[in-house]
Length: 485
Ligand code: FRU
Image (cartoon, rainbow, N blue to C red; front, side, top):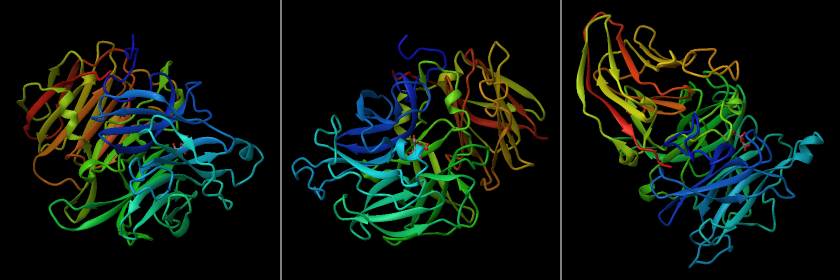
């Protein structure tokens, strides 16, 4: 039965039981990727937050660890990040055994009840045994609150522009940047965003990092800001800004709002600190605050996205943040046999596979008017449509399986503008698990992630050519994906 309940993800991370939301404290240390996460061990809905913990060597196979951080007299343990203090700047470890340091938000439920506006503060904990056990810092909270109702989700990283530890914090409608020499004493140096970006909801879970533009020497900074509500398809979602950071201040180059993922189920995503080769690896919470707590699972609730590598690419005149499954993912893929599929104008073809809900479908095509429908014997189906005329990609899960647990889950077709796709053949790659679909167009230029709850595996894929010419899907392949539990 273990990890084999209805809808249980077979190759994505999910907690063994109970409620999970945001990924926290993503840090790599001594061959191990740590994944902490917002966790409520008593129920399958959100409650007093802890940090759950799991570890992996490949970001695919996970080992569950005991809960790392419990609420204390300062409050619940909200989202935050972790670093390895290699030079022992905090003095909490030694040079021989540098401390792992977690910095998180304390949410004091008493203060909230009393209607105060200073009940979120920032706290710290450290571990001297590679994350197995944690001690809260005596002087908590390390950052108090000057009257911001929402003041949270610290992302800490080492910034070699000013040779300081840097903390990103969100305060309702803007980002604050703080600097420190020792991870304990912090000073605010700048703010960003009161009048930039999307503001349909509260800003949450910031992240910021430098990336080199593919095929050039140019470097740019990327800022991720999750927002709830206000995402393009409703509920919570993650926007990004491309710009510059001088060591203290971030400035954005862009005018329009950009989104890392257009599907409804990729939220609060952040990246790993301290990775080998400085790779930017992103993991998001595969759910949405609109309906996440009503999802039709009983033992546990929600999963993380497939880990994704982030990169910057110039497409036409526009710099785009690409997100695409990490290459290690191929290690759990059982390669199918590629073939070329030709479909006459307005015709359909069908592909069978015993379990599309643990598989990936990949092909390359210059067609931009087609529909893919994954179906099962119960008549449930998931519809994905590329529409060249409207320059939109649609995801319709209204008939995909169980949808009636919450009215907003499937009431609208989800849309993604695809106006900047390059001409010529493009890769379409679709990853499915028992309760999710992740679509990557043009290697991560356009991405949609969505939960689905089919009551039987999809076993048929129907492909319709909606254009007035014959289309070719080259190297069309369905690969099985091994379970990781
Ligand atoms: C984002 C979020 C964070 C907060 C945490 C609480 O999903 O609301 O802003 O720290 O969840 O669980």
